[in-house]
Length: 421
Image (cartoon, rainbow, N blue to C red; front, side, top):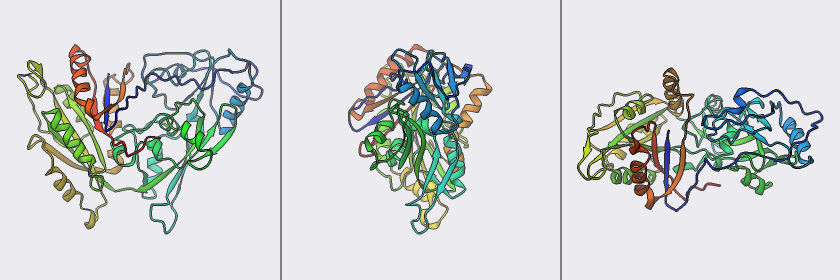
């Protein structure tokens, strides 16, 4: 099980487990030229591994036109026939990409070309990538890096489809600075429920554009996206610092996100025991000489008699390896403002690609132990700033206190002036 709490400066709560992903509720018995395939076991599974809803058929579209023919046929069908759901990499948690007795559209079959456009004379301000919705973000990164560019906002895990994360949100440690992925889109190609293929943007069919972004497939299936790009640094200076006080931990996170001109990524997590300390260090390529006492806390950090827990702030600074952008100097300057448990701050320089793809290493470690393809009752919530400590205490007193909890608890701040569309 894993929990991610993202605390904000405004009261907003969003549970991502509760939304249905059925796109349209009226398929037709006669689909004319639409080619459907026998369902595969993967069409009835997702990453959550808690729900299994088998479809009657699968579509592997070769183009947006294929999806348009399917949805166009279904839009005029009588009510009461099966549902349709779009499935990218299958990382939904509660069956949102499944369709019991219906049709699953496997968008990974769509063209996955990544076309990078860098306009001369504009620096990186006019650069963008036109990306097929079935492409994985790691594929987008690889292609963009060939031009020295990269998208601004990411997810922690890159082996997700572009269409999938743009239909949800796409949040990681860059969101405090650039907003989530759905706030970093210039244009979309969308197939609507009536089978129209529509190109939309903030100024062209804006109602559809903003409805589809984060819309969980309820307003259309994304088939292409235009993503703005920025200059990609060759290296990243990656820092982890440890705390024994939740108040100090969150205060320092808030300090970090107040310095977007210096810091490029901010996250953090709870260190519950030695196992969570080891597992969180799999991808961090530096020796961490942090050996805390996880015994009973006599007061202060976790409350009288409660098991003591620790916290880790994680931040990163892009290193363009120029004298005018000395990442080491920035890290030293920023670290001097923080109140971590000295000397327990650890810094390492890694390639930009390796930093963004860091969770892949953790995935490979879990796969090697047979712990990847297991149920994932994950929960993502937005918590207002004033409720962060109370939410943490609730977790400690309920879910975590049961003793059988295993998994990461990520906690990091977003700013409400970085809009979520």
